[in-house]
Image 1 (tube, one colour):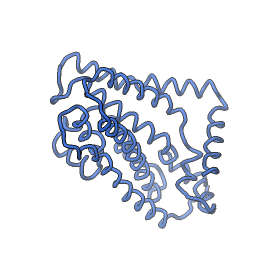
Image 2: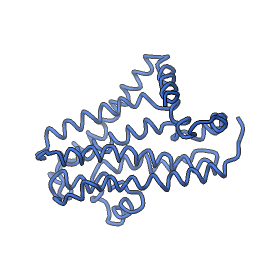
Image 3: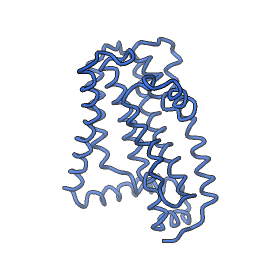
Amino acid sequence: MRAYLKMMLLNLESQMQYKLSFFMTVFGQFITAFAGLFSIKFMFEHVDMIYGFNDTDVILCYSIVVLSFSIGEAFGGGLATFGGILGDGSFDRALVRPRNIVFQILAPHVDFTRIGLLIQAVGTLAYAISKSEIQWDYKKIITLMLMIVCGSVLFFSLFLFKATFTFFTVQDLNFLNLFTYGAREFGKYPFSIYEKVVLSILTYIIPLALFQYYPLLYLIGRKSEAYYIGFPLLSLVFLIPCCLFFKLGLRRYQSIGS
C-alpha cells in the first residue's frame, strides 16, 4: 500500500508542475458543475413538483449522485482512458511487476483536478440538507453515507466495465460513456421520473437506482421501512461481474506494443 500511495503522490507532483493550469482546471470543474444545479433551479421556477419531488429533494438527489461520481471518477481516472494506457505500453509494464494490476493502473492516474467537482458537490449537498425538512437521526445519516460510498463504488465499477471492452477493441469506445457520464446526467433527477422500464433496468441490470432512488425515498420520508437503508449495499454486487469481466479480458489480452 505504501508503494501505491507513493505513486499517487508522484502523480500529484506531476499534475502540480504547472500550478496555474492545475488550479484553473480545478476552478473550471467547480464552475462547470453548477450548470446541472442551475438547470434544476430553472426547472422549478416553472413547476412546484416533479412526480411528487420538490426542488430540495431533487437537489439532494443531484448532489449525492455528483459527489459519488466525482469520487468514483477520481480514482477510476486511469480506467477512463484505458485505451491510451494499452497503447503506450504502460499496461505491459504493469503486467511484469509483482503487484496488483488494477492498483498499478489507478495510482498513477488519479485525477486530482476532480477536487473542484467534489467541492461543488459537497457544497450543494450541505445546501440541500440545510433547506430540507428531513428529520435527521442516526439511521438517515447512515443511509446518506451508504448512498455516497456505495454510489462511488458503483461508478468506479462502471468505469472498470467500460475499460474492459478495450481489451477486445484496443481503442476506447466513446459510446460506453453513456454508462458513466451519461449515468451522472440521468441521475440529476430521481429515476422514477423516467419510464418504468428504465427504472427496472437501473434496478436489476445497472443498479444505479439502488443507491440513488430507493434510499432517497427513505431519506425524504416517503418510505419508512428500515430495509430501504440497505439498498445501497445491494448495488455493490455489480462490482463482482465487472471484476470477472475484467479478468476475462485480461486472460484474452495480447500485447499491442507501443
